[in-house]
Length: 328
Image 1 (cartoon, helix red, strand yellow):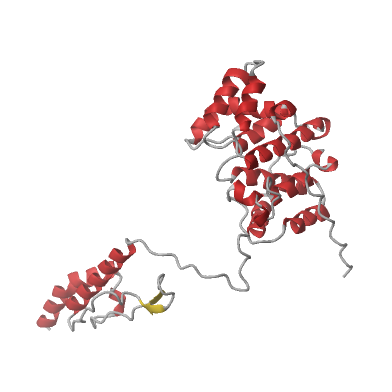
Image 2 (image 1 turned 60 degrees about the horizontal axis):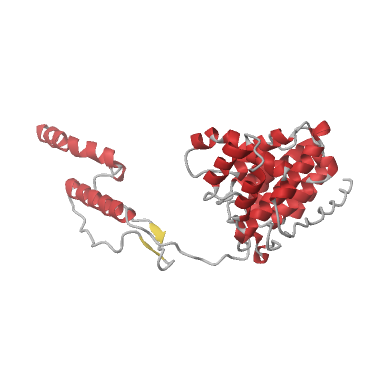
Protein backbone atom coordinates (compact mmCIF):
# COMPACT_ATOMS: atom_id res chain seq x y z
CA UNK A 1 0.00 0.00 0.00
CA UNK A 2 2.80 2.41 0.89
CA UNK A 3 4.46 1.56 -2.42
CA UNK A 4 1.30 2.42 -4.37
CA UNK A 5 0.99 5.73 -2.53
CA UNK A 6 4.61 6.53 -3.38
CA UNK A 7 4.10 5.72 -7.08
CA UNK A 8 0.90 7.81 -7.19
CA UNK A 9 2.70 10.76 -5.61
CA UNK A 10 5.57 10.44 -8.09
CA UNK A 11 3.16 10.45 -11.05
CA UNK A 12 1.13 13.44 -9.80
CA UNK A 13 3.25 16.05 -11.69
CA UNK A 14 2.99 13.96 -14.86
CA UNK A 15 -0.81 13.77 -14.59
CA UNK A 16 -0.96 17.54 -14.05
CA UNK A 17 1.09 18.06 -17.22
CA UNK A 18 -1.25 15.69 -19.05
CA UNK A 19 -4.23 17.84 -18.14
CA UNK A 20 -2.45 21.04 -19.21
CA UNK A 21 -1.51 19.63 -22.62
CA UNK A 22 -4.92 18.04 -23.22
CA UNK A 23 -3.54 14.52 -23.26
CA UNK A 24 -4.83 13.40 -19.91
CA UNK A 25 -8.16 12.23 -21.31
CA UNK A 26 -6.41 9.59 -23.40
CA UNK A 27 -5.58 7.45 -20.40
CA UNK A 28 -2.24 6.25 -19.14
CA UNK A 29 -1.48 3.80 -21.88
CA UNK A 30 1.09 6.16 -23.42
CA UNK A 31 -0.27 5.52 -26.93
CA UNK A 32 -1.12 8.71 -28.88
CA UNK A 33 -4.59 8.82 -30.46
CA UNK A 34 -5.13 8.16 -34.12
CA UNK A 35 -4.07 11.19 -36.10
CA UNK A 36 -6.72 13.11 -38.03
CA UNK A 37 -6.64 13.57 -41.79
CA UNK A 38 -6.41 16.78 -43.75
CA UNK A 39 -6.55 17.90 -47.36
CA UNK A 40 -3.09 18.56 -48.73
CA UNK A 41 -2.77 21.91 -50.54
CA UNK A 42 -0.30 20.40 -52.98
CA UNK A 43 -2.07 17.21 -54.04
CA UNK A 44 -5.66 17.73 -52.83
CA UNK A 45 -5.58 14.11 -51.60
CA UNK A 46 -6.40 13.06 -48.08
CA UNK A 47 -3.42 11.90 -46.07
CA UNK A 48 -2.67 11.53 -42.38
CA UNK A 49 -1.57 14.68 -40.67
CA UNK A 50 2.17 14.71 -40.17
CA UNK A 51 3.15 11.86 -42.49
CA UNK A 52 6.06 14.00 -43.62
CA UNK A 53 7.42 13.93 -40.07
CA UNK A 54 9.81 11.19 -38.93
CA UNK A 55 7.89 8.48 -37.08
CA UNK A 56 8.02 8.55 -33.33
CA UNK A 57 8.14 5.23 -31.55
CA UNK A 58 5.50 4.99 -28.85
CA UNK A 59 6.69 4.37 -25.33
CA UNK A 60 5.19 1.93 -22.88
CA UNK A 61 5.59 4.32 -19.99
CA UNK A 62 3.36 7.25 -19.24
CA UNK A 63 6.28 9.68 -19.36
CA UNK A 64 7.48 8.30 -22.71
CA UNK A 65 4.02 8.64 -24.22
CA UNK A 66 3.76 12.18 -22.90
CA UNK A 67 7.08 13.17 -24.51
CA UNK A 68 5.91 11.70 -27.82
CA UNK A 69 2.78 13.77 -27.57
CA UNK A 70 4.71 16.95 -26.85
CA UNK A 71 7.07 16.33 -29.78
CA UNK A 72 4.11 15.81 -32.11
CA UNK A 73 2.56 19.07 -30.94
CA UNK A 74 5.84 20.92 -31.53
CA UNK A 75 6.13 19.51 -35.05
CA UNK A 76 2.55 20.60 -35.75
CA UNK A 77 3.35 24.15 -34.58
CA UNK A 78 6.43 24.24 -36.78
CA UNK A 79 4.40 23.18 -39.81
CA UNK A 80 1.66 25.75 -39.15
CA UNK A 81 4.24 28.56 -39.19
CA UNK A 82 5.26 27.69 -42.76
CA UNK A 83 3.41 29.26 -45.72
CA UNK A 84 0.82 26.99 -47.27
CA UNK A 85 -0.26 26.79 -50.87
CA UNK A 86 -3.80 27.49 -51.96
CA UNK A 87 -5.52 24.65 -53.71
CA UNK A 88 -7.22 26.09 -56.79
CA UNK A 89 -10.20 23.86 -57.43
CA UNK A 90 -12.58 24.55 -60.28
CA UNK A 91 -16.11 25.42 -59.14
CA UNK A 92 -18.64 22.65 -59.28
CA UNK A 93 -22.10 22.77 -60.83
CA UNK A 94 -23.61 24.18 -57.64
CA UNK A 95 -20.90 26.80 -57.09
CA UNK A 96 -21.53 30.51 -57.83
CA UNK A 97 -20.58 31.45 -61.35
CA UNK A 98 -17.02 32.57 -61.92
CA UNK A 99 -16.24 36.27 -61.37
CA UNK A 100 -19.55 36.79 -59.56
CA UNK A 101 -18.09 39.02 -56.84
CA UNK A 102 -19.06 42.67 -57.36
CA UNK A 103 -18.33 44.41 -54.07
CA UNK A 104 -14.69 45.26 -53.40
CA UNK A 105 -13.59 44.54 -56.99
CA UNK A 106 -11.44 47.06 -58.94
CA UNK A 107 -13.53 49.50 -60.92
CA UNK A 108 -11.79 48.91 -64.26
CA UNK A 109 -12.54 45.20 -64.02
CA UNK A 110 -16.21 45.70 -63.21
CA UNK A 111 -16.63 48.25 -66.00
CA UNK A 112 -15.23 45.87 -68.62
CA UNK A 113 -17.59 44.24 -71.07
CA UNK A 114 -16.37 40.83 -69.89
CA UNK A 115 -17.96 41.56 -66.52
CA UNK A 116 -21.18 43.01 -67.93
CA UNK A 117 -20.17 46.69 -67.92
CA UNK A 118 -20.38 49.03 -70.89
CA UNK A 119 -16.66 49.76 -70.92
CA UNK A 120 -17.02 52.77 -68.63
CA UNK A 121 -19.53 51.98 -65.89
CA UNK A 122 -20.12 48.76 -63.91
CA UNK A 123 -23.40 47.07 -64.62
CA UNK A 124 -24.53 47.09 -60.98
CA UNK A 125 -23.81 50.80 -60.53
CA UNK A 126 -25.66 51.66 -63.76
CA UNK A 127 -28.68 49.63 -62.66
CA UNK A 128 -28.74 51.19 -59.17
CA UNK A 129 -28.38 54.71 -60.60
CA UNK A 130 -31.24 54.11 -63.03
CA UNK A 131 -33.37 52.67 -60.23
CA UNK A 132 -32.72 55.60 -57.91
CA UNK A 133 -32.90 58.24 -60.65
CA UNK A 134 -36.64 57.89 -61.19
CA UNK A 135 -38.64 60.92 -59.98
CA UNK A 136 -40.78 59.09 -57.43
CA UNK A 137 -37.68 57.50 -55.87
CA UNK A 138 -35.73 60.77 -55.85
CA UNK A 139 -38.55 62.31 -53.81
CA UNK A 140 -38.08 59.83 -50.96
CA UNK A 141 -37.67 61.72 -47.70
CA UNK A 142 -34.06 61.60 -46.52
CA UNK A 143 -32.80 59.71 -49.58
CA UNK A 144 -29.10 58.74 -49.16
CA UNK A 145 -29.16 60.04 -45.58
CA UNK A 146 -31.62 57.73 -43.81
CA UNK A 147 -30.07 54.38 -42.92
CA UNK A 148 -31.52 51.19 -44.32
CA UNK A 149 -32.07 47.93 -42.46
CA UNK A 150 -28.59 46.47 -42.06
CA UNK A 151 -29.71 42.85 -42.28
CA UNK A 152 -31.53 43.49 -45.57
CA UNK A 153 -28.54 45.23 -47.11
CA UNK A 154 -26.20 42.43 -46.06
CA UNK A 155 -28.53 39.77 -47.42
CA UNK A 156 -28.86 41.53 -50.79
CA UNK A 157 -25.13 42.08 -50.98
CA UNK A 158 -24.56 38.36 -50.40
CA UNK A 159 -26.98 37.51 -53.19
CA UNK A 160 -25.25 39.88 -55.59
CA UNK A 161 -21.83 38.54 -54.67
CA UNK A 162 -23.16 35.01 -55.18
CA UNK A 163 -23.96 35.85 -58.79
CA UNK A 164 -27.66 36.73 -58.71
CA UNK A 165 -28.61 39.31 -61.34
CA UNK A 166 -29.32 42.77 -59.98
CA UNK A 167 -32.49 43.12 -62.08
CA UNK A 168 -34.15 40.43 -59.98
CA UNK A 169 -33.26 42.19 -56.75
CA UNK A 170 -34.34 45.63 -57.98
CA UNK A 171 -37.62 44.17 -59.23
CA UNK A 172 -38.20 42.77 -55.73
CA UNK A 173 -37.60 46.23 -54.25
CA UNK A 174 -40.13 47.69 -56.68
CA UNK A 175 -42.65 44.99 -55.83
CA UNK A 176 -42.34 45.70 -52.13
CA UNK A 177 -42.59 49.46 -52.65
CA UNK A 178 -42.37 52.07 -49.93
CA UNK A 179 -39.63 54.38 -48.76
CA UNK A 180 -37.79 51.61 -46.94
CA UNK A 181 -36.97 49.91 -50.24
CA UNK A 182 -35.62 53.15 -51.69
CA UNK A 183 -33.29 53.48 -48.72
CA UNK A 184 -32.10 49.89 -49.28
CA UNK A 185 -31.20 50.66 -52.91
CA UNK A 186 -29.45 53.87 -51.84
CA UNK A 187 -27.49 51.96 -49.20
CA UNK A 188 -26.35 49.42 -51.80
CA UNK A 189 -25.08 52.20 -54.07
CA UNK A 190 -23.15 53.87 -51.25
CA UNK A 191 -21.78 50.50 -50.15
CA UNK A 192 -20.57 49.81 -53.69
CA UNK A 193 -18.70 53.13 -53.79
CA UNK A 194 -17.30 52.74 -50.29
CA UNK A 195 -15.88 49.26 -50.89
CA UNK A 196 -14.08 49.99 -54.15
CA UNK A 197 -10.41 49.13 -53.62
CA UNK A 198 -9.53 52.41 -55.34
CA UNK A 199 -12.05 55.23 -54.71
CA UNK A 200 -13.52 57.29 -57.50
CA UNK A 201 -11.00 60.12 -56.98
CA UNK A 202 -8.10 57.63 -56.47
CA UNK A 203 -5.63 57.56 -53.61
CA UNK A 204 -2.89 59.18 -55.69
CA UNK A 205 -4.98 62.32 -56.30
CA UNK A 206 -6.48 62.57 -52.81
CA UNK A 207 -4.03 65.19 -51.56
CA UNK A 208 -4.23 67.34 -54.72
CA UNK A 209 -8.03 67.29 -54.47
CA UNK A 210 -7.91 68.24 -50.78
CA UNK A 211 -5.52 71.12 -51.48
CA UNK A 212 -7.78 72.33 -54.26
CA UNK A 213 -10.75 72.15 -51.93
CA UNK A 214 -9.00 74.12 -49.19
CA UNK A 215 -7.36 76.74 -51.41
CA UNK A 216 -9.94 77.33 -54.11
CA UNK A 217 -13.31 75.67 -53.63
CA UNK A 218 -13.95 76.49 -49.98
CA UNK A 219 -12.71 80.05 -50.52
CA UNK A 220 -15.00 80.54 -53.50
CA UNK A 221 -12.12 81.23 -55.85
CA UNK A 222 -12.82 81.59 -59.56
CA UNK A 223 -9.93 79.27 -60.25
CA UNK A 224 -11.66 76.32 -58.60
CA UNK A 225 -13.29 75.01 -61.79
CA UNK A 226 -10.08 74.93 -63.91
CA UNK A 227 -8.19 73.23 -61.07
CA UNK A 228 -10.88 70.58 -60.58
CA UNK A 229 -11.19 70.08 -64.32
CA UNK A 230 -7.44 69.42 -64.55
CA UNK A 231 -7.58 66.95 -61.65
CA UNK A 232 -10.58 65.09 -63.04
CA UNK A 233 -8.78 64.78 -66.39
CA UNK A 234 -5.99 62.85 -64.63
CA UNK A 235 -8.39 60.17 -63.41
CA UNK A 236 -8.66 56.87 -65.32
CA UNK A 237 -11.61 56.79 -67.75
CA UNK A 238 -13.70 54.46 -65.60
CA UNK A 239 -13.20 56.71 -62.57
CA UNK A 240 -14.17 59.79 -64.56
CA UNK A 241 -17.35 58.10 -65.75
CA UNK A 242 -18.26 56.90 -62.25
CA UNK A 243 -17.65 60.33 -60.74
CA UNK A 244 -19.65 62.11 -63.44
CA UNK A 245 -22.58 59.71 -63.20
CA UNK A 246 -22.62 60.08 -59.41
CA UNK A 247 -22.62 63.87 -59.76
CA UNK A 248 -25.53 63.70 -62.22
CA UNK A 249 -27.53 61.46 -59.88
CA UNK A 250 -26.92 63.70 -56.87
CA UNK A 251 -27.81 66.79 -58.89
CA UNK A 252 -31.12 65.17 -59.80
CA UNK A 253 -31.71 64.37 -56.12
CA UNK A 254 -30.94 67.97 -55.12
CA UNK A 255 -33.62 69.22 -57.53
CA UNK A 256 -36.19 67.27 -55.51
CA UNK A 257 -35.08 68.92 -52.25
CA UNK A 258 -38.60 70.23 -51.48
CA UNK A 259 -39.68 66.59 -51.22
CA UNK A 260 -36.61 64.68 -49.98
CA UNK A 261 -35.17 67.52 -47.85
CA UNK A 262 -31.70 66.80 -49.19
CA UNK A 263 -29.76 69.87 -50.29
CA UNK A 264 -26.61 69.75 -52.37
CA UNK A 265 -24.60 70.35 -49.21
CA UNK A 266 -26.35 67.48 -47.41
CA UNK A 267 -25.75 65.09 -50.30
CA UNK A 268 -22.10 66.17 -50.50
CA UNK A 269 -21.60 65.50 -46.79
CA UNK A 270 -22.95 61.97 -47.22
CA UNK A 271 -21.01 61.10 -50.39
CA UNK A 272 -17.67 62.86 -49.81
CA UNK A 273 -16.18 60.01 -47.70
CA UNK A 274 -17.25 57.50 -50.39
CA UNK A 275 -15.73 59.42 -53.31
CA UNK A 276 -12.56 60.77 -51.68
CA UNK A 277 -10.75 58.42 -49.30
CA UNK A 278 -7.24 58.39 -47.95
CA UNK A 279 -5.01 55.41 -47.23
CA UNK A 280 -4.01 57.12 -44.01
CA UNK A 281 -5.87 56.93 -40.71
CA UNK A 282 -9.57 57.65 -40.40
CA UNK A 283 -8.69 60.72 -38.34
CA UNK A 284 -6.96 62.25 -41.36
CA UNK A 285 -10.11 61.77 -43.42
CA UNK A 286 -12.20 63.44 -40.73
CA UNK A 287 -9.85 66.40 -40.63
CA UNK A 288 -10.23 66.83 -44.40
CA UNK A 289 -14.01 66.42 -44.38
CA UNK A 290 -14.63 70.12 -44.89
CA UNK A 291 -12.45 70.24 -48.00
CA UNK A 292 -13.77 66.97 -49.46
CA UNK A 293 -17.37 68.09 -48.88
CA UNK A 294 -16.67 71.36 -50.68
CA UNK A 295 -15.13 69.44 -53.60
CA UNK A 296 -18.13 67.11 -53.87
CA UNK A 297 -20.48 70.07 -53.77
CA UNK A 298 -18.54 71.75 -56.60
CA UNK A 299 -18.56 68.55 -58.66
CA UNK A 300 -22.36 68.49 -58.39
CA UNK A 301 -23.06 72.18 -58.99
CA UNK A 302 -20.40 72.82 -61.67
CA UNK A 303 -20.42 69.40 -63.28
CA UNK A 304 -21.06 70.74 -66.79
CA UNK A 305 -17.93 72.90 -66.62
CA UNK A 306 -15.71 70.36 -64.82
CA UNK A 307 -16.43 67.18 -66.77
CA UNK A 308 -15.31 67.46 -70.36
CA UNK A 309 -15.23 65.00 -73.21
CA UNK A 310 -17.91 62.78 -74.64
CA UNK A 311 -18.51 60.12 -72.04
CA UNK A 312 -21.13 57.51 -72.82
CA UNK A 313 -23.34 57.69 -69.74
CA UNK A 314 -26.58 56.17 -70.96
CA UNK A 315 -28.17 54.31 -68.09
CA UNK A 316 -30.04 51.06 -68.68
CA UNK A 317 -33.84 51.14 -68.36
CA UNK A 318 -35.23 50.12 -64.97
CA UNK A 319 -35.96 46.41 -64.56
CA UNK A 320 -39.45 45.13 -65.42
CA UNK A 321 -41.76 44.60 -62.47
CA UNK A 322 -42.29 41.15 -61.07
CA UNK A 323 -45.56 39.40 -62.02
CA UNK A 324 -48.27 39.67 -59.37
CA UNK A 325 -48.46 36.86 -56.87
CA UNK A 326 -51.23 34.34 -57.41
CA UNK A 327 -53.76 34.08 -54.59
CA UNK A 328 -53.27 31.12 -52.32
